[in-house]
Length: 230
Image (spheres, rainbow, N blue to C red):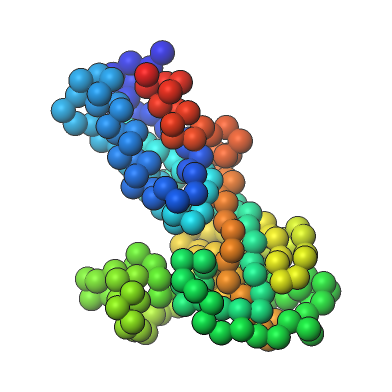
């Protein structure tokens, strides 16, 4: 049984974030239950890398003195699995916004899909999506996007070490990606669609690994609270 000192000295919690939860909600919920359990006024709790509400999977939560390790964990390579829907785009590059343009997919073959992945392996320049938490002149890009504004976003160098197509049922394509910190899988989906002379948006996403940490060893927030904090 973990004690108050255990949480203050530092714990790494592996949480399997459910769909529709924000990363902040997970942190808030766990922090509240730790405070309640040990009657604490405050305790440091943070996460090592945001997952969008429409994504599920591994979220590393650090408590107490281990919050100093957050940057270290954020910098580790990550693995994702997911699904790209070809033949259309959305302004957010995922399912947060509605389809705005449709494209033909008749020319897209299994061979073309697999060959096109090769363009994205290695160090590449990637432009983050307009719907992101990055800031421009102190304002979050997604706030500007929701107001219908667009601004120039500079590309950044990222590394994709593996990009594997695991299933093709057009217009859906399932994949597994291993990538560096700062990679936007939504941008990858959008760019992949363009490279196929079509369109593409991210329709499913799950983070499965961060460094040596695996979602197989994680618990959903309510399960963790029930088993550890009650």
